[in-house]
Image 1 (cartoon, helix red, strand yellow):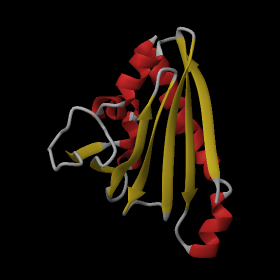
Image 2: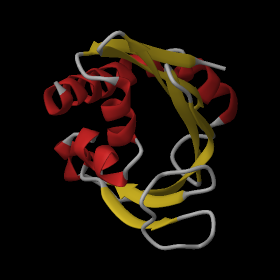
Image 3: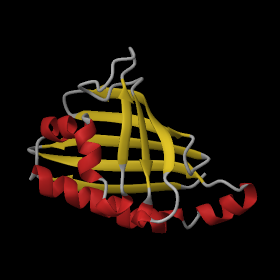
Length: 159
């Protein structure tokens, strides 16, 4: 299965970076405008609408219409796991009903003095069986601009 990874250093403490990524407003702030993201609903593990934190069990219903072209792509992102320690924090989400056959995204944050290392790791599989597997090797080329922009925005907003 193809894997995409990106890492960057943010001149902000772990606590601030973690808090930013633990809220739906962080997702909205990091998604490029050309993706036309709409958050259609957020439900916590206990059924609570719009929970304060994106904890394990939270489901986010969203849609995108890249470049404003074509029909909206809808899916649910589920927070699968989440852990926070003194020097590291991470959470993992997957995609249900979206454009990928498989999408598991691990967000990892590691304190390094007063700075934080931000790491994204995406395991993905494109649809269309064998054709999708062949095309999947090139998926990183499509992810690179999006994640480069996400990391740039993280730095801009937190440094």
